[in-house]
Length: 294
Image (cartoon, rainbow, N blue to C red; front, side, top):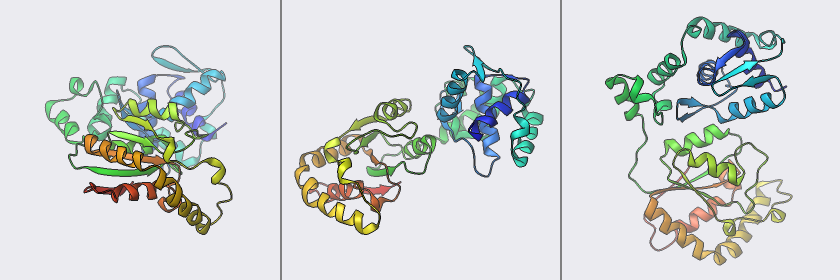
């Protein structure tokens, strides 16, 4: 079993085997915040801090019969002592979480996280209701609103879905443009339909333009930067010359939406074709904006 799932089961165990779904997400957030390397990361969702990855694990554990759920709560089913399987530091964190928040209701936990972590309340449907006017003003101030026009590029290699979405949210990206030729991924959240759905939750439009991507059979045997450079030399000479219509469409989209991001897999921009696509757009006659790699 993945260690991160043991953490969830240990939290359930510490709280008498059952927790409201909202409470579990908040407690897991507070737990992860105390870890040097968090098992889960979170995004600002409808009820505050929320991990899609944790929710996927919870669904899997329901399927495997380790927990059950109803409309509002999760229940630990087996008798395994998962607390004993935690790392020593994580055991101490769990004790702190239990002692500090063990008697708080879901609403109280929600309010606590909103007050102490304003960013995670920016999309909450409950913040205005449960916070004071001054507290809610701090949440509003945490919202990222930008009027400048910026073309971003972003890769998802080595980061979680939540970290990826947070980068889009914090940079106020309006449209995510998927420039992969084949938009499928073994990594949770990054296949086309999943990514489109997750982005929609935050008001971010998703657009796929496979024509500006590189086919999989051309991406074999990339073992050094020289291999990548040869690939991109061909990409610039052939693909970019034949896709000028899409480059112009992307520039027009940028003018209209102001903040768009080109996305592909690689974290290193020098090993991804989106670098050269973005640079081609900046060389168009009507370009007068900013380019950022995030």
